[in-house]
Length: 501
Image (cartoon, rainbow, N blue to C red):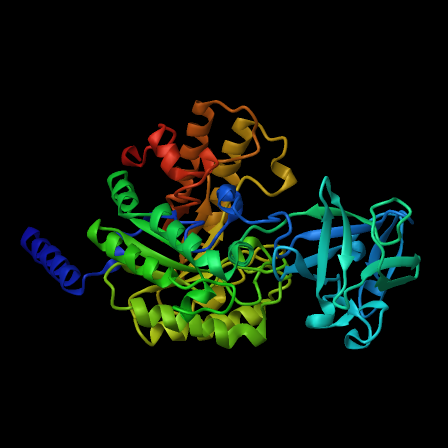
């Protein structure tokens, strides 16, 4: 009996070695290299400091009030008609999203996605919002008062300034000057800055400066030294967010900058050298799957859908073709955080089928990761779909943030939530048909003034629970200017010790 068992064990070891079964490394302990190849400005805002007028980047939401009338400009019926000035307070209808042409020239997009411009394709002087795409007649210069940058004038393409004639008529035919309160061309601008992503930083610096700014960032933000640090401290994988523009290197569409594929090549080299695996994560897709800055969105509108599927599949094919035979490749994640209901389940499944097939054209070994939808979506909605596929993973993101339920939780309540609710949620998507992956989590929370010991206990709870994910977990992020979001800082300062777990 003992001899037979010995033979079985030897044969099992033999076949495992011969096949080099990559699943032996599971579950992975990974760090996400966020803000490296896809910009997320909140993680290091100083990168934007050199941009002139850096409060007026793409997607900035501006509300413009006539000083004389004390009324806000808005698109009548939220778009498709005239620009009027008849609102005492500002809501979505009175909010314009900027498309930046240069540091002082912009297109202004209204709620229903038309662009403010001059009537009759620029031949008239009345200001309307009817164009679905911007041209010269939809391009305005924002002139700011030197000692009060909230006070502005809007110069139209005909060389004249906008003025409010009455609450239902705004025209571009004012040729006077001055900043007096009774001047009908003077407005007060309020700015909300929602986006600090790849589009904002590259378009903000412009074609002359952006290439060097981005290259310097790629060369210094993550280096081989970081891979050595991660490997020595118990991490065996990295999750690397990339944007759709990587597939167009070396000359991606304006304003994106070429070179991110070379940086990703370096990451594969460093990972292999230091015994780590790479999870490629398509974080930003054309049209934006969630409207967030990390999707590469220009103005925050979520527009990805069926019409964008062919282009997105082409990006996956580029990545699979380039890295399928690299021994460091662990998985390709087809899309990050698609948002419901803007991305429908049917559309997502159509894309996942085509994306999965694109990966399988080049490799049968690499895992394909399917991200669950954010928003109002059933966390189990992909399980049946995944059962027909091989080597697939369901990705969920768990943060004790972004929900008012966490606002007043104590330290212990947060920890209990992880041990009870998160553990239960993870079990529901951990099945025999697909592996589970906590693709993003962090030790930051809404508790204020928490002690180091409290952070340690919170991190330990998550490591214990998310360690049950069959594919593994990835901390967000490896590096960040905000300390508790930075796994590097947490390790260096004794908050997390993966070697002891």
